[in-house]
Image (cartoon, rainbow, N blue to C red; front, side, top):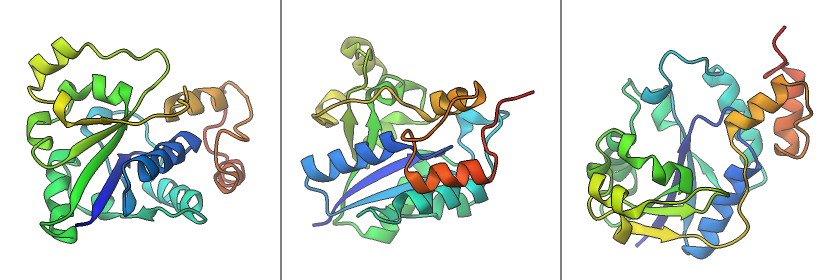
Length: 201
């Protein structure tokens, strides 16, 4: 039985926190593979400015070039809606019925799980590998009321946590600060060379 970690996101940009989550999960959940799944247009970001898919894919390819992780572009290639609940059956077709899936997220995403499209249906298709985030507490009573049975399907990851997100990376860049060491070196060069996330005039 293959043990597969699935890490979805816009990756706008991919940063060291993404790689740390993937590595922590790979080691602690004894995963055979961790797959990065860039999303085309997530429903919760419709109407918001998102960097072009071509840039996001290029950055992710650079971020993963020297890693043990895989890149799967199934989601960006399919028609919307780009939701986790509709992506998982397609991944099941690729990996087969015997594969065991873990959807890898930070604790902030776990806290927001009730806002996802059909979260209960998601949990019939995978377990959740969750990395704690600084300052994020889970109100289990409320979460269990909204998504019954979720607690039994969470596998907590252990280790140092990072208070970093793509949103804060973009905000930091637009404030005129350096992104060096927040991003993999090749991604940092790409962002600089393509003038992404510049301070707005």
